[in-house]
Length: 476
Image: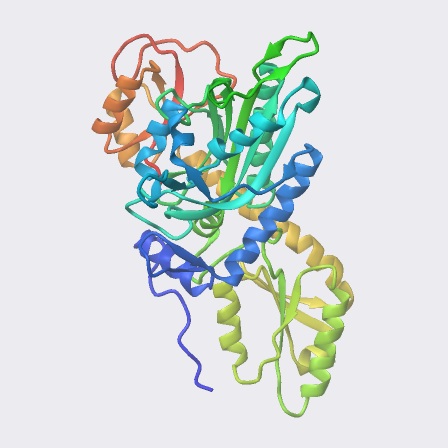
């Protein structure tokens, strides 16, 4: 069989957008759909999403959040009930027109409206609270012009949690607990560090009281919102007539929260860790953690394949595969698994069997090492953890090196031009933030970091008294 050409043709340092597109497609994660803004998630890409689901479903269980499913189509009247929410999502809605006189239906951009219609039926007493549900589903946001596989598309997969509480204190507390769990997942599973905090008034979720966010920095200097958690207040409860009888036998309005992460996490992993050979995956996230490549010669074929099976059995606690295809050369396979991001490659040939050894290759550094077979299991275990930690350490250094605190507008502009996340004094007004975005080439606020000391000085732009320090950068 003729060996097709593999490999990335564009260097990461030369053209990140084109390099990224090649990595995603050639590593078999996703492809472009016939309709602009849509994508096909291929099995390897979906397997990564399943790893994220598996990790986070354990968190949901710990927090007593139940998985459920609500309809894809939402009546137009539901959106009109909450004015700020409706206005915020109006450009992004895709409508299904029906027979004359029948109400239009929107394809969900998010599920607050349809879920809270049912919460109003299900919540009657304080005994029904807290009500905590999550759904893994797809959503459609039509007003997406510049699309990039996983990072920004019209349709994407995500999880969206929606909870109702008796008190604001409980609502706020659990919104922040979820944010912390997202942060742990980004760092422990994806090996991506984040900055996190509260969104400004201009950037918060339409209809929310408070929005909290996690932001990662991509190698091209743009921030990527990794997840959000919202204290929605009581606004949605009031317009959807969600009420309960409290312990005091009086009628009360519950506090609502919502939170979510999406398949853009897959894009963040690919862009953060990958290199000019292709995809690099953290071991805890990789669908296949180890691949064994037997070096096959006709004379020693049976013996080598037997040893490969023995090694697979020895390492059965890991996600491991043997590639014994004979129509491809060993070198071609090496390139394929480097492209696909498998964290560890084990090479075994007749000479290795003679010497009771194997060759192991780290995908993140491409360093080869000879290991005695009787040391293999403990070596692999330590190496997978080393790779996971090394990727996080490298990404943390990139993030820390890219944060710059600025003292004046000239430094602010210079920092944005140099692809930094700038930390600056800010007055907090929507009007001033709009001016900053216009004059700084589209740079927007990412978050107000937590635990700030009292901010001294004036706003970086309007020179009014600063309310707090804020991270700004360009973003996806």
